Length: 105
Image (cartoon, rainbow, N blue to C red; front, side):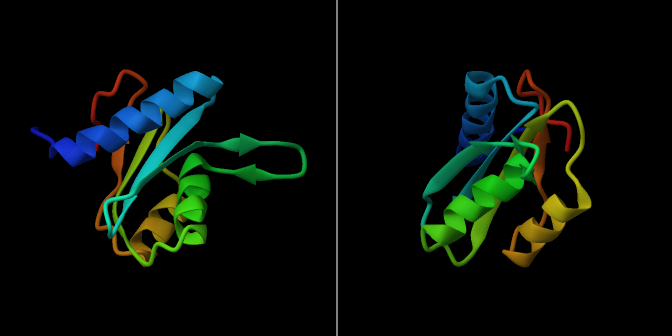
């Protein structure tokens, strides 16, 4: 499958965030203006957020109204909550890649 260069970019951003922090998940989103936001999951005793939730939160708090794309880099699969927030903001499907960047779905 050939990816759009902009989709490849957010997968790379998600991989870099995950590697930089040694986190289980990395995510990146692209908003309607083309701005990108990358994040990792948060795993504290008092707060647990997926990487997708953090990246979406960053985009929304920066003024994004909709998202064009969401990428998740993880050994696992996106949660139902990740899929739901992406859909709520207009994304048809999440880009899911393994830690090596290989697209799984």
